[in-house]
Length: 270
Ligand SMILES: NC(=O)C1=CN([C@@H]2O[C@H](COP(=O)(O)OP(=O)(O)OC[C@H]3O[C@@H](n4cnc5c(N)ncnc54)[C@H](O)[C@@H]3O)[C@@H](O)[C@H]2O)C=CC1
Ligand SMILES: O=C(O)[C@@H]1CCC=N1
Image (cartoon, rainbow, N blue to C red; front, side, top):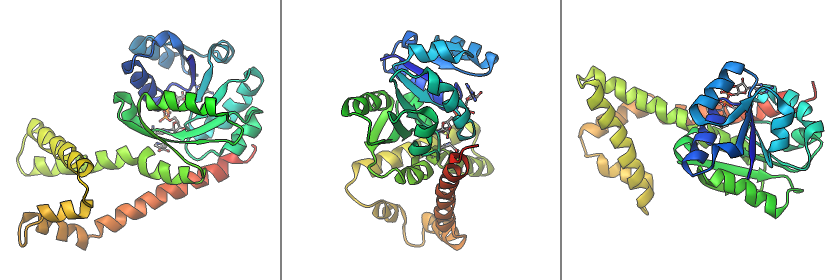
């Protein structure tokens, strides 16, 4: 399958890198990127053909992946519309609804999905939604691209993609934020950088593997770490006092609200 990415930024790079680790040849992937210096970087890093010219790259692609910021999507879609010849369009943009993209693109062959950056190491997770006009064969093609870089799940209700964006699309940033906090604490407690990195990352990896392999609720796993009057209890009491969990939940709601807002603001015709 030949894939053309429009937009060669962070997420396109994560997908290209992940696809290549899966064995996709760079010759099957073209990128349209508006900045010439980024085109050169993409070519040097991945060996893909990267160009500022839309037409030839679109003609090459059997699947077109829209990987520009939501704010640039309408403009790109309007330029793309006359160049499409029946290709499946996959959008990874946060917030922008398929019905708006269909109006701009003049096609209903659209899958909207939400991947995340661990796609780069084929450990991503992507939720997908297909417009009703998308054929089962096209759904299968979309899934085969995204499942090459991690796990996938289909959504029947497009609105759920706002929730997905807040959970797994933005999610790696929350995890990195927590890792940053633990590394800062480790440093303040006298551990050196290398020791902090190993202790914090292995703790995350170990806890996630344990949660994944266990049939039990994570709350039970947490309780098992927490000895009465012990060290964990002190930390968790401090977090509860500071409403850390409530703040995290509120923050994720804010992300979902922002996803819906992006759809409302940017879905209108300019
Ligand atoms: N970064 C992430 O973790 C995730 C991002 N997304 C979505 O992916 C999309 C891209 O996000 P990022 O890669 O983070 O942004 P980015 O800013 O790193 O990349 C976007 C790229 O598009 C290029 N661009 C803008 N207008 C263009 C045009 N007319 N023609 C060609 N190239 C153009 C920009 O120069 C830039 O390199 C967004 O819509 C975002 O919502 C989805 C999941 C996760
Ligand atoms: O922050 C954003 O808007 C994008 C969507 C999900 C992750 N990054």
